[in-house]
Amino acid sequence: MARTRTRIRSAVLAAALLVPLTLTMSASAQSGAGGVRMAAAPVLAPGATPTCDPTKSVRPSLDESGPAVSAIKRRGVLIAGVDQNSYRWGFRDPASGQLEGFDIDLVHAVAKAILGDPNKVQFKTVPTDQRINAIKNGQVDLIARTMSITCDRLNDVAFSTAYFEAGQQVVVPRSARATGIDQALKGKTVCVADSSTAQTELKSNQHGAAKVRVVGNQLDCLVLMQLGQVDATMTDNALAVGQAAQDPTVQVIGPSLTSEPYGIAMAKGATDLVARVNQVLADYRQSGWQASYDKWLGPYLGPSNGPPPANYLP
Image 1 (tube, helix red, strand yellow):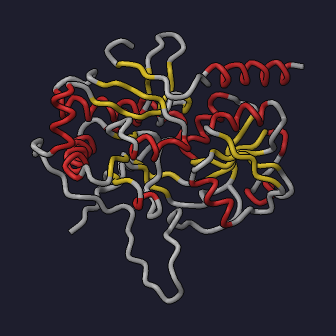
Image 2 (tube, helix red, strand yellow):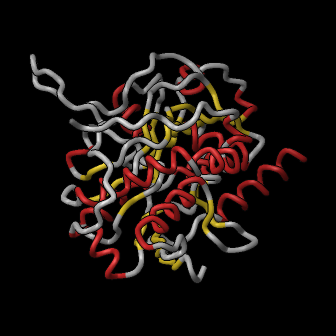
């Protein structure tokens, strides 16, 4: 009975974080088997040679005369696509109502660098499967939302240098007593977020899963797991530990199946903005990144070796 009450309370907490999509808010108002590999490598024709290194981005610059940065400065506010359902990354504090987390700190750093004020941000919450569309349709200037840089995604958007390294792992109820990923998934119903790299991984290797259930946001998977409608969740380990922190009746299983760098996504033609954001990240790696990590992620991911190094195009 105590376990049931805990699970119900956890489900209520998770569900409370789920709100209608594309909510806009102004900041001023407001593990198993398999080897490690880079996720979502491009599909190549027979005999072709891979040419994509998804971690490479344009060199940093302080120049703010380009069209994308100039448009932000004229507007006087940075429009950023974020999450509000990923605990410790981008989530709405139930007490203050403010958006907080590791990705939110990063957006504030970009706003301060370009506009001189970290609070000159208009946040738009964007579901996982709408991140690329939000950029391509001009709804946001950038997306900072635990978004893995992949060669496939580089066909549609541009990315900053990597600011975090994650990988795919599995979340299961502790009662499942699974000790490895294949054991946790074999014959089970597994939940993934639509357009996520977890979905890509399971298309490549289902790890014995009998069924894959696709949802709009990764936190939906936690709710479905709490309700007994799915047996397991595959998601980035950085997000998986957030689920386990919200609900102590679940646990993260197995080593990482992939190596996935997170980047800030922007429009393909906004090279000046990408270069300016890369300068922000260059400064943030020296001052800001570690403090944000210690505050939001350290208690769940443990000590950090620091941010991934920048990797620039020639």
